[in-house]
Image (tube, rainbow over all chains, first blue to last red):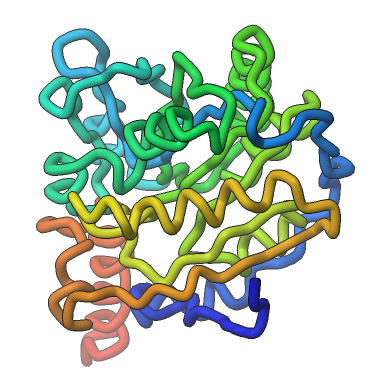
Length: 170
Length: 118
């Protein structure tokens, strides 16, 4: 695969936000990369989105009222989205994106149905039964993600014997 | 979000980031990055365009078996909607609270600086 093609990473970002992103400093402390022991054709794959998806009527939406009152805060909790979710079961609680396209086709941020097709073809081993939805705006602090929810997420992925997690920040 | 990916890698599970802001992922030393030039909220493409969604997912999956880490692949797909429409289209109909707050602060500062009474 060619590595010469490069996207324009600021194409859709509001101009006023570009300097902040350009100046974002290097964050030391990454763990050594995992070297998977299994081929892709045997791997169990889970998905994570930060588009603020939740199950209508069965899960609380992300806390947007508190964010409206305290704009530097974002709800750090997450929702588990089951493998066989239906489009009509899903709501979006996120004040920083227009949710219309996701409410028309959730695969643009959580492509469970695309993964299922790859599992049928044998490209991957299996699709996880549990997928994860966060709300990406975290305001001034990602401490809760670092100290609590990241740890919980990793624990559940291990319980489900997941080999690969694909994350899509919104 | 790279903070969550780190916790997962730390537990021994491989991660891929599919992102519109690959430089942020790079500054977190994310091991596998699939970069897309898509509007926010549309990491895998256009609604109901299964071929486009498969291209992005396939690219992400292809990074799982790479051993030349860290690795970044940019998905060579252009957004098929005219730029201005797409740029406006992904944004919320009402400004996010933080955006509204910052705008208010700028306006207040501007008003203060131009107030002859001060």
